Length: 250
Image (tube, rainbow, N blue to C red):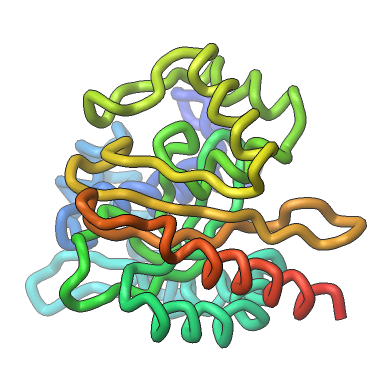
């Protein structure tokens, strides 16, 4: 497993690159040729890796010859303590928040310089989300990411700034000064509202889930249309965050 190819990637590294390619596929399925083009790996290497991963149940091959992520990978992913235990404790509270607000509800955690969506409940008639459960979001453009970064420490803030603050809309935070101002506001009031920062036409409100002795372990966010007044949802949002924190502390 430690043997490296000419690009300096180990066998494991090549397999992870292959699996990561499915995240960028429009329908989460790709042919061998498409996988080779996406990963930059030789077609023969892609063919060999796909055959082995399919035998192990990590990939599945459809009748059309295209590959997709298999259930085995999903099963393994569900074993991650930070996601599984958190999701299990939070889900009843997220469902209550959804019933009260009838808006999109998300639970996110930090992972390096990105935010990962652990759970998402999507309202049928609410604004369309770009996120998905298990997907990643830019910290600087999401209220959930920013309220978590506000409690993550100076090293984390510097890493996010150093990674770049690309604009996703005219309202996206793109400077260190602006992101530090948003973090200060999030710390001061205990929640944060963003309008049009990731997707034009949407507004989000987020609060951290703070567990004594562990800090901010996650964030809960509600995402609705930009014309709505999300602050009316603040009491329910804060109650949800506190409820999840109590459940995780027991």
